[in-house]
Length: 451
Image 1 (cartoon, rainbow, N blue to C red):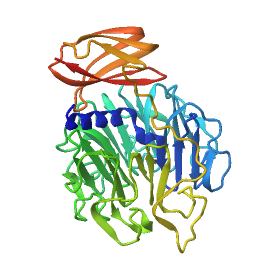
Image 2: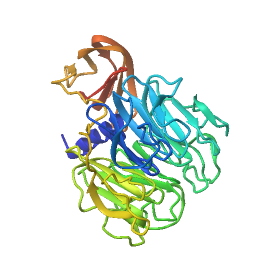
Image 3: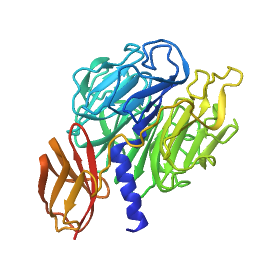
């Protein structure tokens, strides 16, 4: 397979399985998923953010009370976890110090949280939201605070979600990006600074396979690995060599082959396909990981001490990275122990300016859902095919759904599947496609070729 096709496969798998949801950096606390399916947390726990039933900070990981079968975590102002049964659990500010189920949500496959609001993506492609709504970040056409989830108006065919402080992003299966909420800095990307209580289309973006968000800025990664950014840029957090706010996407030409991107308060972080990490924006508190506290980097710069990284997350003033060996590395602000290195930095020296390994950590799972291959759960034959083929499953599917996507992430076919076998009869043009099969317990993927 050509290297460009390998990059596309990597991008697709990262999109569909959200490796980044194994780790999550919040305002001042951190979450990870253990290999056992439990979750661990550290940092600011004053309002119950750590989920251990207490209200105190911890500089080393503690177990989140009573959670198992966790497949995704998200830390914002509060903490959230997605279980393999499709339910969502929450703790911290606005909730309690121990996890409780978010009622009314089922069949959830992805979660994202901002500074007081949360998003959940259902398996039917709709988005649901709850929490603070002062800027329309729930996308329900109102500014009403919601204690129970409401559907984001007009959401359909969504494959990925993410949240900034007070704005939200969604990626559709056709490769377009949609936003809603606060827009004071142009973070909605629709050539205005007018906030919106409804979804709006980001200007001029197509072929997108991944999205990311900072506090007031936004990102998109296209299938060719190019990075696009818009929104607040006062700390150079867009990476376009300027500090000019952008009201529509601009290409960040100093980096290529991007697979994942995220943003914090005034900084940004990305992974390239080679497993290297790049950061830019404000260098306050050593958050860029370059070993100093100089003012800023206006374009992406390599974090030279990191390699083989598979997931990243940006907190308010710090960063997390997950290596392929299962170790977690953090750097930046540490006044509340959010780096997990066993210390609380003093206010006079409150940072770690180069990545350091999190100590006393459980074994971290490298993928939230198993990616199957021909020797495992999912077999398709013949492959290559003419568009007619049979799929067999090692474990029977229950009320599952099979979807086929082209290389820009556009869904081109879907059927329901039950049992241990399914027959596919679809009329597709010659080329490479990606097949995803999901039920309430697992998610499998495979590349297919149509000749």
